[in-house]
Length: 285
Length: 267
Image 1: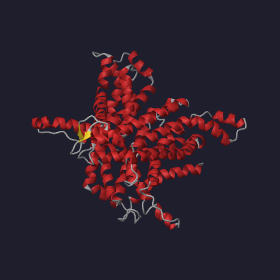
Image 2: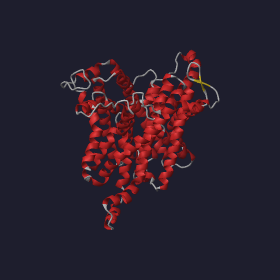
Image 3: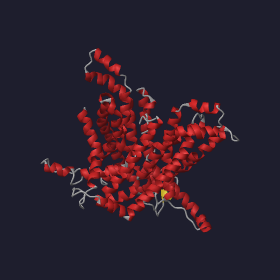
Image 4: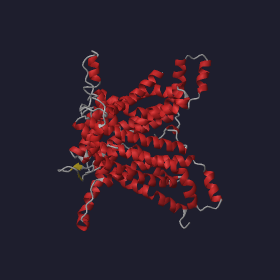
């Protein structure tokens, strides 16, 4: 071979490196630079060096507030629903069916979130569940375009992502520990609280982090099920870039969003370390 | 416990099932089942806007999945056993590309490319009569960024789980590195690469948010569906949605089979 190992490596990395430079590093750098600029009179970007955009973030506080309330709330709701299912799959279910049931959980995650959210427009809309409730004499409910609808959409969309890491940590759990707890006279609820739950925390933390991060940048679910009334940062960003064309302010908002995510991830990583989580819990779906 | 699990599975599949069910309705009402027919599938497939959007989505997904699998596999091979700063840098890039929200990727790509195009076009256009604009290429390139990172992760996991002794045996028996690559390494990696390709295709085909920003004048199927939903819910969207879901499901089953064959199928 005429070329050295090192050169071959660089050649192989070439296209990927080019892609990361041109479509990841450059765009993110542009966003960072633009966030210190101003809005051009006709829309777009005008060069400047000012912190005005960041100072103005307060005017979009509602979007941040909604995101910072509904993203954790959605994460928690997904966790509460996912945990028992993950427990069932890891501990209770007949191993013969386990793989099939796991695949059934993960499949919806890889199909269009657009169409899955659309399904809930149907179910929560005027002629769906509200009609059913009214027919049953349970009163007049308006569900679509409420924070509740957005929460349902979130749980529906991200449940698979939560089930998986929790399942992995529960599945690894040494069953002899539970037997030991039982032998020592611990009732089932106690061995759950003092053995199972603490040992599954790494999976809980990983799943929560994944879901929370994705929710921070969510646009479709609040757009479709919140009807413009339940606004996330993502919705504000679409508005700023595609309607009012205020690139500088939108860039500042993007930078703030990513910075918030980084802070949360860092805090979470520290938390994971403290509870002695194994890094290999983080799987790719 | 079992009842609870059944309820969760119902929760996961009932909404999709309802869309699929209503897509076979014969009537105009999107919320009542009126007879059974495939009339809305016919309507959808004879709607030129739907066909155009489908063609765009399919060609973007195919192009980006091919590029992502080739470039991703190349990078995964190069990264194996590599140390030093370049390795750390690439790991960081892969991680960032996967973790940054799609909406931020879309925005960043949009403003960066528009800025570059605006500064290049004034001298490019008089010279060549051609001007750069957002469209097929920008959308494909943006999808490759994410899906290539996905392929790198999947293929690298396979390389790490691979039996090294086969490669050593091949070179011990006198095969050139290139022959070893074509006859041993690549066939062993192929199922993982194909799985990566299928996942990349599915991602690109289903993506809405990145395309929303960088598709320019192109309309992909998710963009078409999104703007149709804004105008109101119709059985035609149910039919299109059901077809899109069925396509993703088919590709997923294929990808899963490939991953299983590759022996890396834990997820």
